[in-house]
Length: 363
Ligand code: SF4
Image (cartoon, rainbow, N blue to C red; front, side):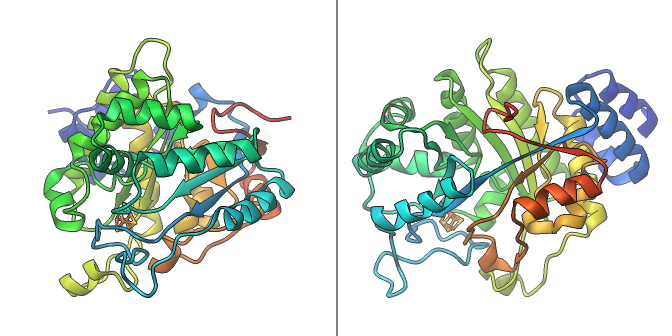
């Protein structure tokens, strides 16, 4: 029987930990041991003195979604009085503001709109790229791509090819939650399955798209299922073509439960302590040696908890927050501008380095 010291040594040698090994470490290892090991691995990939960050902005283009995820307060049915889709002009005002703040990338996400097929997105992406040739479109996510493919009668590959031709620059890892179908059937039964999510990402990697991977934890999943999620992400990364970047980063965040149907249905509250979040960041760093960047999600946990993660395997602090409507309607109310974000990084003892979506440092 291996001890936690043996398993930490194994991770430090760059070997893959199994689901059982990861779960054992997560449950049993002292937090300082995990933090120290994860920080050591982080410092092999990155300058130990630097922490990266980015200026981009979320734009939610519609709140109409047919998925009805149990943890989501954001969506409305298409006939709801509260349903909306923003106009191109409204979107442009938001993009103008982003460029004024020095950013050039939007994280464009909505829902699974029953009427928006591939041509709707092609028209939108082309219009945006025509007005803003330098704009970077970090847009959609595997469930939206899967949905668009389905209602357009296209394969995943063709859907991605057409979105790329229209201007898609990179694909966020949205909608992963926990990549285990037992969990998905309980919290998001109408969303794509774990295998379908992974299939979209594998196709994206084959087409050379840069993607990210995420995890929303702290709801109905077990610790073993969290580790299964990490192993599945790691396996897809192993299958990416030679020379492709694949998943450029991994971003875990804790579930925000305020007012959600999941919390009401189960009649319980869900919360993740700072130490559990830090532990999750550290174990992610140790379980995913083939993904270079781990991001601390200060948006859901706050700047202080995010700062501790910079000593637990995270090397990136994400973006300033100009607009975000999905987690903010589930109880997350943190915000920060460039000054606050860089000050937080400096207060933790690091040099803030601004980056783009490819993690190239900007002067
Ligand atoms: S989380 Fe996304 S897919 Fe699920 S209901 Fe909300 S908008 Fe729709």
